[in-house]
Image (cartoon, rainbow, N blue to C red; front, side, top):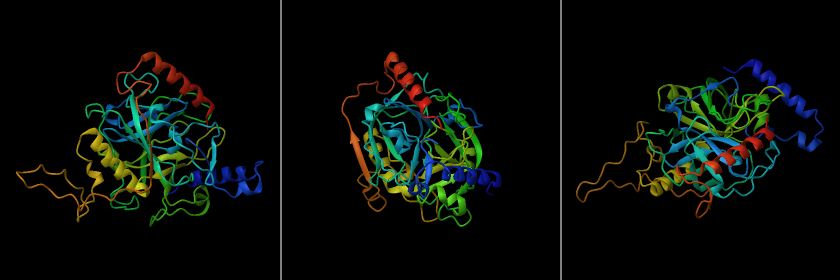
Length: 371
């Protein structure tokens, strides 16, 4: 059920935006905030939730992400570009070139700034299309695998549509390392809030985006929740509540943006994983090859009865399973940047002084990017 009070708040926000000093042309564009601490959430130190990761960008800023394979992280695209200091965005905005992968560092620990272990990135994969709405999603391949003993990956929804109500419910859990309100300065600590309502999903038989909600996005590759996420939560996952509670979470998307008042972060707009399934599956196969492990089950089609595929059986003698019928076609919607040796710590062998400096820089920029 949609929240009437929240819908009213969103409507008031949009009216305020329309009455601002923007020119008439800008008034007609879908407006939001980038990187839209989990507001009203609680600190999360549960090791079982280590698939929710923190991301530091050498150029500044705090972001969040989701581990979806031992060396593969789902996040927002605006988290892998150089911050430009402009928080307000519209669907007419375009993404620039991604940073070099060695500018990104990932941790599974609940405190981004005090983490003992950081994992360096080796490759960044993004959609070919550069318009902001619907394409604010990125995949980061890490130099090293994160061991299962440290974090169990979540499953991205790529084998079916998130509008499949037999598999996905109407509420989510949000997790992230952002601030707790637009005026706070407390980013870097993982927080969680459960049972957040989904407001609308394009194509849903029961939650189609209509009226005021449709104003905030014209892309079917996004969905909107009740929010409770703020700056620094960008890239963090929206996890289907039922599967999250059962301990095998489906991640539905990466946080892109959201409207806000001076004191409160409102609804949240996420980039859908199912809308970028080919890109994510291709990245999953590539990361598995680089990491030396079997490709995740989510890279394969569901069985005829809708159940998830089992892991490939090993070869017996000269007989091996033919995977040609189930291997996805090469994705054509990705751009990749790579780099050579990292000038910052790789994996868990980091320079503590350098990491402290990185964290301090991220904190300062994060403070300037409050929503």
